[in-house]
Length: 385
Image 1 (cartoon, rainbow, N blue to C red):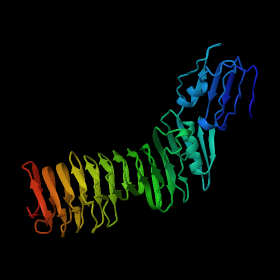
Image 2 (cartoon, rainbow, N blue to C red; image 1 turned 180 degrees about the horizontal axis):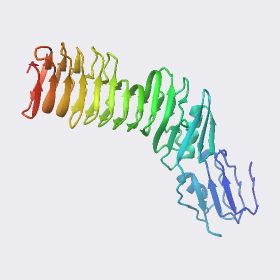
Image 3 (cartoon, rainbow, N blue to C red; image 1 turned 90 degrees about the horizontal axis):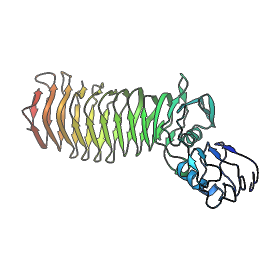
Image 4 (tube, rainbow, N blue to C red; image 1 turned 135 degrees about the vertical axis):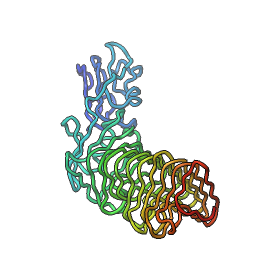
């Protein structure tokens, strides 16, 4: 309502997050007003053009300062036309989400921040946490079941606040078919247990997603941006597409499927410097790269399988550069540690091995190029050098 508090003797005002608009001259002629705290985000097109005392307008700059600085407390000296945002450090940036089905609640410091559908709760946290790096805990010791819903992290409608770096903890599960339990377009670090009983656990569309702990059950679908795996356990596949980058420096990626544990294609890049990538299927593949994909293996990386297929399979002009680590096929039956059809292989360090001295090959190349340097150790047969 226009002129809502016009001419009152207010000195301090707190505007809660539930307020989404301020009408014209709401605080006009409030000459004693020296402190205003905004707990939520108000878009510029819903913010009245005169919130400072009328006789100070238009020199008062509270509206402009708030639109630039967002949530917080703004103060001025009595008689001054200049407002200043006060530096504050939240006592707790941890949000806890509980609930199930279609009804969820987010709390921080024991106070309710939002209630409603899971995406509504997430969007409210984004607004509430503006200017901080929030931690979102799924469940309160139990598993948060969001049914067939998906959680999307994005910075659309940026006037309503933007995510900075989000940390995920706790446990969450869904049965959504396509979009992923977590669908990401921002910067996320996670130690959470994330599960999808249907298909995709994490869809990283264009952001950066770092997994440093927890267990991921389901596929990680990666399109653009970067996925970093520094710890934790991935029980499922990782697919890398459209020039995306996957960095694995720790943790375990493992699948029981006949499909590759890590599938890289369409110009994507996979760099493995540590951790373990494995397939436990007797006909599976640990890593496959297609359509000009690039694979780099170094450090303490271990890529392993006991398959009658290939531990690493290169097709479609893909390239493998190995300077360290281990690539092995422990099957004493047929199979390959590295198999290349129309790819290129460079091994200048590390160990490539195939168990069984007369079965299968450590390196098998049908076309393309193979370079093996003096620092490499090859245990098993080589074809197509």
